Image 1: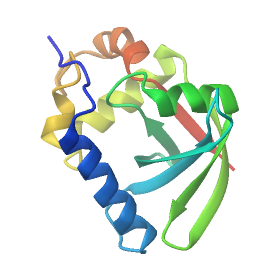
Image 2: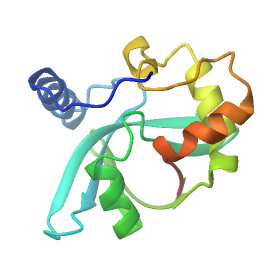
Image 3: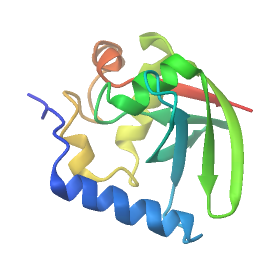
Image 4: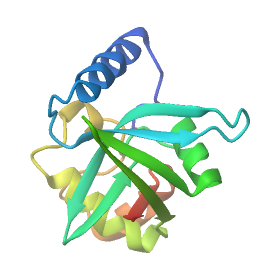
Length: 146
């Protein structure tokens, strides 16, 4: 059984640290800052996310499930990605489970995926694609377009 995401003090501390470092221009692998308009407050909300690149496409994957940035992005349909001084306005489209499954599978199998993130999935890198199709609604995947 996969773990349920809990926003703990250590997660807040890690997000604050990642946000500070990325804003300062320190490269932290695939981590960017996603700023999206809040669906209720209409205020900009910023969170660190990993931008996954596969087959010439860029994706945002929600490893912790349907959290606030996912709900806000679904509502807004566009956001800003920031890495250091580079800002990029993006549009996104959410993939269907069938489209998301291969992206999730390749992402889970990748060496760059932290072990603690794999605990939030009910699949492993050896699982068949059909298992990833069933897992995809719990971990939305967005294709980034400019």
